[in-house]
Length: 256
Image 1 (cartoon, rainbow, N blue to C red):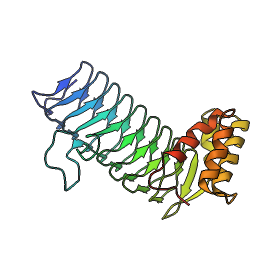
Image 2 (cartoon, rainbow, N blue to C red):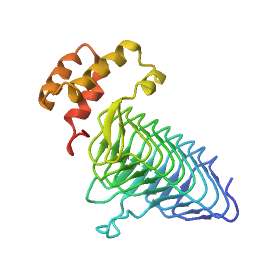
Image 3 (cartoon, rainbow, N blue to C red):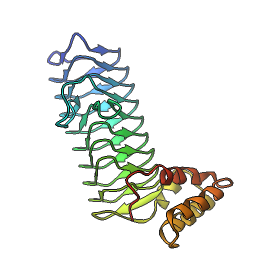
């Protein structure tokens, strides 16, 4: 399962049923779990842990040093979960000691060609990142978020669960859960109704989310007043909890 031209460090840990293609390089302190496929000409450096049943396509660079001038060779890490697809020419950096020291990617993510995930990013599960999406350092992404092609996210921004970023969107503030954002700089354009339907949200839940979105963006309320009203509604409308949490946890401020 490992091609004769692949270079594997003696300090790497490779499970059974891992496939490594021609001319790929697996460096020190890399752990790859069963069922993962590494195509040709991939470079993976460590410390990096890659879970089960991932597929990393040719020419990707995974787990190399963070692109941060403050980085001084500290042993920071990258963790990738299970069943992720990482396409051609993607770059994923390890973390820095200025944050938690690791970059994390969850499970079942679809990461298309030329995507860049910088140091200290925290990516949930079931996300989609279209070609050339770019995440600067310290970005947090919730489950089921979708990034349009060439979208870019500023350092320390949070992208909420089920959010949708349009093509070429430039994100310089936090995007609440369920919200669609487009433009550069990006502005809110409503909620991701179609995505919610595909994930099993019913008509009433989507209506409740739309009403909560209007409190923040259409009713002219102060944010604190909107949060208080949404918190009250969430007691009987559990689908609002993700939206409420993304409002409360925002540190960079919300897109407007």
